[in-house]
Amino acid sequence: MRDNFTGPSYTVGVEEELMIVDASSYALVNAIESLLEDAGAANVERRDGEIKPELMESVLEIATKPCANVEEAGEQLRSLRHNVRETAAARGLTIGSAGTHPFAMWEDQRIVARPRYRDLISALRFVARQELIFGMHVHVGLDDADKAIHVANGMRVHVPVLLALSANSPFWRGDRTGLLSTRTPIFRQFPRVGMPPSYDDWEHWERTVAFMVDSGVMEDYTYLWYDVRPHPNLGTVEIRVCDSQTRLEHTAALTALIQAMVHELAEHYEAGTELADYPWQMLDENKWLAARHGLEGEIVDLPSNERVTTKALTKRLLERLTPHAQQLGGDDALGGIRDLLERGNGASRQIVVYEANGDLNEVMAEIVAATAL
Image 1 (spheres, rainbow, N blue to C red):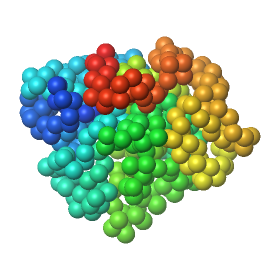
Image 2: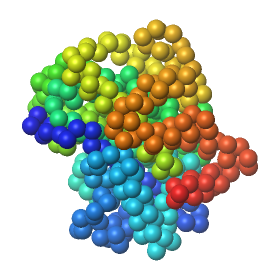
Image 3: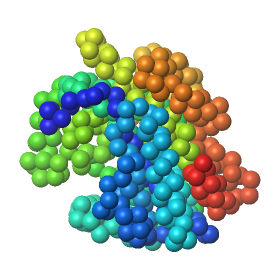
């Protein structure tokens, strides 16, 4: 697996999990198989990426090909979103993007007829059945396996900021939960999720994975669903913490920020710089604070061990990472991060719509409309 980290470094790939909903009622619809058939996605290779099923039939995943830069990834995502929306429209359906559907019930969702997902239900039962959530994953290519471990370890400190920016799931089963990322605690019920452990080097990671596979608790490393993980089959580090974004500009902005984070950490590795050793408990606590309060709360600035506003810490991080984004050609996309800081993340925007009339259908209408922009 080590040999797959061949570069080129800093390529990006993005996956978005999207809702399939009725165009009138905005209720989730179990329609992935018919949409895949209509799109020809099961048999035809697309130039702009892939359309794939996920665990439930009301979920559709789009995934870019490896892209040289964020601009190219954004173009592929825009094309994919457009194509799946047009395909859905022919059946009276449409597409929405957020971390949760505001009023859907998991009991009404069918499981996709694929062996991996049926085996998952068999193994995890209720825990998997109620996983009606939608995330985005960002892959960044690297050219060295030990570097990938260093980057994955270092990315852990950034997970809370990425979650605070991307939080986009304040409603669940018709209820305003009080959290800005309700998706986070729902997914936390899975095994092998959340803030990952750190690893000494690539051999340490391989030994750990081999031990778990040999013990029979998982089939392969893709059953490690941590917020950050090396993905040797693709030669990438994968960041999995973000809620799906309603607005494409925010998906692109988070991708550019993650790419810049990876670039900075890769340079640290190349310079022989050691990572700071922060307690796992504090990294995880910061993630909880981000899920609860989004950008409007405080998290612990770990170097100083003092609580600071999440916005202030994010602005400081953005200033430091902007030169890295400029080197990679992604600095224009960072305007979306500034928009999130100034106008609020997706969860805050959903709440503004809801508070006007207390109408979750109105929230979904806004989500669907903004997904199409």
